[in-house]
Amino acid sequence: MSSDTSNITVVAGPPGIGKTTWISQFLSGAGLGYLYPGAGAEAVDRLRIGYRFPQVSVIEEDKALALLTDLPDSGRVYVELGFHIDLAALPGLPCHRVAVVPPGLAESEWHSWADEVVIGNNIEIPQAGRLSSLWRAPLTGQVFDPPSLDELLIELTGGAYGRVMRLKGIFELPDGQAFYVDFVEGIPGLEYTELKLPRWLEGRPSRLSSLEVVGYDLQQNTIKETLLITCLSDEILVQYQRQYQQHLSAGSPLANSSPR
Image (tube, rainbow, N blue to C red):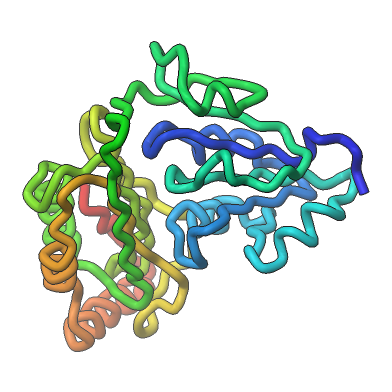
């Protein structure tokens, strides 16, 4: 077991600050692990790390304690804490604690907790005593109509269903591609990033996907109902997939079906 506490790095900060982005810069090489406690198997960041960095071991939460307490010298684990985690209630496992905070914030609970403070996105910190809510929707098996999805996301991040501070999701499209979508309040626009995964052109995808929204006064039922409207039916999905398969059989390149 390693006695080097830097082998375990725990990263905390407000939603949208860039915790996953900061961790991602270190995820090259062997012997790396990633843990996102308390978020479930379909947490977007957990899925995104697994898809982007297949060499990284995404740690199951029920195995985390045993692994972290017996980490080999060559191992290194990054633990990302969601904003809902109480820093004061964390177990006293030896680690290097990193807080990612916005520029201009000189004092906070993250500063008091951290061994190292790094500057992240220039976002607004929620007011003390006003708790934002997290809404997560599992999307595994759903395939979306790109223009309808783009329209919904613009409405959603524009405040049509409550104030959205943070939105992130993994969406499957009819050409078999999967995209990561990212929005942070205060940073202009929606960011679409193609995930380098094999095209899924046979039935509904079984690889995991989901959507997470953080905000205030979210109309969760309305968001869910509107989201389902943008999903393709079995019949239409089969038609799309047949067309794409024919293009591939003919050696024709497939056009990118990104919503943007």
